[in-house]
Amino acid sequence: MPSLHPATEPSVAGHAPAPAIALSDVRKSYRSGLETAHALRGVTLRLAPGSFTAVVGQSGSGKSTLLHCAAGLDRPTSGSVVVGGHEISELSDDALTRFRRRQVGFVFQAYNLVGHLSVLENVELPLVLDDRRAEPEWLAHLVHRTGLEPLLDRLPGELSGGQAQRVALARALVTRPTVVFADEPTGALDASTGAAVLDLLRTTARDLGQTVVVVTHDSRVAAAAERVLVLADGLVVDDLDAPTPGQVTGRILETGR
Image (tube, rainbow, N blue to C red; front, top):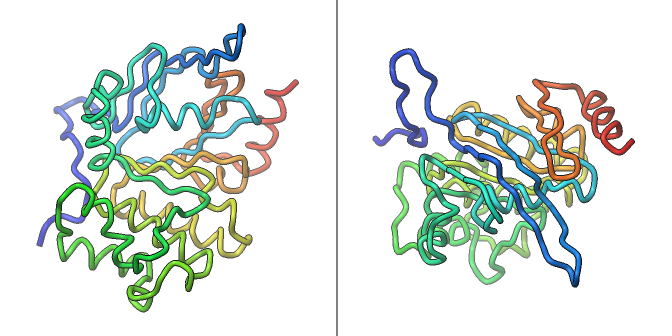
């Protein structure tokens, strides 16, 4: 039976393992008429394999831009983005698309499930698009861990919000990605269902050795992470270890003063 843990670079004796994600002086600017907006102003960070990190900040702080650049959905204006040991900011468009399919998983607030495909077909979709087949043991393990066994033949329209988000998480994990990015994953869910999905993300990082990055405005969601990065005006202004929701909220409010 194959290992159920995503591959990570082995550590060299006496040295920490290579980071799952490494950003070095990443900057992103946009032109708007005659003005230039600076969304990221030189972000440098490293996230360890198997870590669970939340990114927070006020509206316009650069959270979504950071996610897009780190995940290869957008290219930085300058700087280096390395995911799983691969410098992705220099890849061609086709190579970047292939890289995202194989090394990056995504969970969005809106689920983004394909309405005419069954739950099982939605989970397997990233592999189908990459002309690959699912490993039976890994697929069965994901289905079990996400509690989808009784739902595999259903269509997305027959699912609750929590069930749909669990399908999205299984789909994000099916390729054994280097990192899973979750953008406001509980934003469309009620408090109880959101807490269940959040717990699933947390146990995924812990038990499967999966690197997870959550972008959120919700301090309660952020406080479930091991590490919280606070953004303001395109910069990481604080790095909190296992904070309480109140500490996260307080720090975000301080950045707006």
